[in-house]
Amino acid sequence: MLTRRQLILRTALAAPLLTVANSLFAQGAAKLVAETDPVAKAIKYNKDATKAQRVDKPGTPAKDQICGNCVLYTKVGKVEGKEAGKCSMITGGMVTSAGWCTAWAKKA
Ligand code: SF4
Image (cartoon, rainbow, N blue to C red; front, side):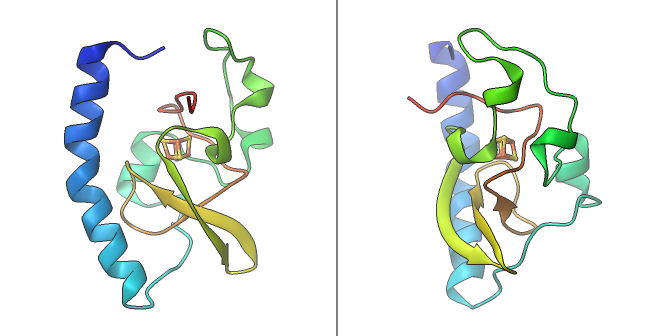
């Protein structure tokens, strides 16, 4: 569960990033983010959660954590043939619904 401070910080960080992501998507620049993207790399994003070293978090076992049920994920649809969406943390491209990173937080 996020503390109030964490929620405020994430929201403050997310808003400008979402604006950029929305802009890129509107321009038809939707693509999957590369795992070599600096931000994706920093948060250990993996397009396939089953290949990531997930750890249990309060209320959610590791095996149940994917981008698709992360609070920072907004579904977009098919991108490069995979179910994908925008991530508030990553602006270099879309993340797969089946992906995961260390910033995962349960969607309410
Ligand atoms: S788990 Fe959440 S924060 Fe991490 S890449 Fe996926 S959508 Fe973004």
